Length: 114
Image (cartoon, rainbow, N blue to C red; front, top):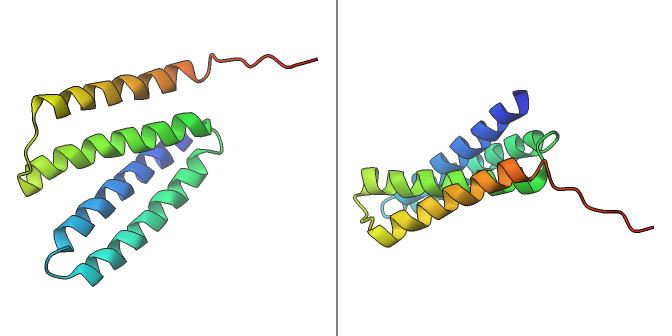
């Protein structure tokens, strides 16, 4: 459970980093880039702790998938960017992929060659 908290922190830091970059892009790009890099540093740091117990493919897949979904939803709410049916379908497919990674990753066994 402990490592999933770091996974959650990695996702939150990534989402805030990208939203910060977007927010400051027009008026203060240097501030936005600085804040983004600092937040991404914390995101990758949290992710590096999470992958000590969570398989890398699962962790990275979930980190990117959930991050992408949250960034998309926040861009609609905060920046009034449009979201159409095709994009919603893409989000549903991303969710399905993340679930398949999480639940299928532990059951896969690779046969060793003799």
